[in-house]
Length: 363
Image (cartoon, rainbow, N blue to C red):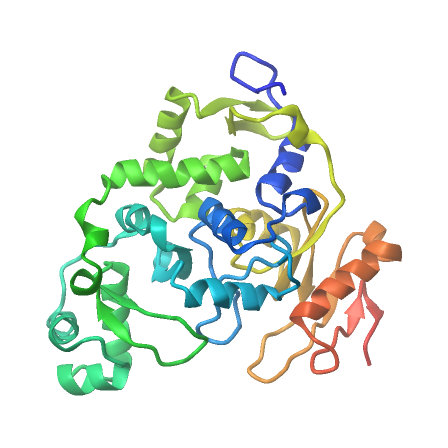
């Protein structure tokens, strides 16, 4: 296969989109089927957020990136992997909950740890967990004297600093909290340098995303823009990336390890959550493409996000108001496949898809 290096012809925008779909495991030929595949894909795309507007404690679901060989649902696979402690829940860029492979945790701690001076309340909570943990929140409140919303606030601060962690093995509201150094001190013994860790996290991002701008890499990682620009330039210097013009897009940082097989287009449909790494990276463009619409899910067709399911989330079962897709996706097999995949997220009759392309669907 032909490799794409700076001194050779760079890929076109269409080739980038095709390769990106494959590297995000959104095409039939690239989907995983085993638990080891789940972990491999998660490592490539991590930190990976759990779906929005689900039960607290929902794991990272690889819908349309992973189809279990034994027919298990995406939830069953994710819960099985989590129950075996192969994935770890923490707070990463912007304090958002996400999952990473447990085996890769030192890398992500080094890249995302948010150090700050601790308040007296935070110190009290940390000391309580160090001497009495693991504890559930009611017990932490009783022993530390920090209660209610203030306790939740301090636990989040300590979690972002990777001083404590919540062990989430089941989809439950209340889980035990641990003092990280006391329980898992080996994770902290050989942390990489923060700059090296952030550069590696961005290298993985660019490998999956194929061609990026500084703003896109910042949106995905949550790292400061100036740092992101510097790390991308370092990846150019090591020939992981080439800084080049992509026709129709302008200047991009493009990976240098593409081959011709990745430019072979595949027909595919995937339903993406608002917290999906592909969505997070393109958040600004998607807001401009679908202005003013409340988003439940995005719809990926062939090589890019082309539509969405719109509606307003509610605690009780709620409906999809409409499915917005291009005209060519509003009938035939594509339409039926989109509806079928949406039903996995919004099961009928508990939840209805009221309209598809503006036309009435469920009554």
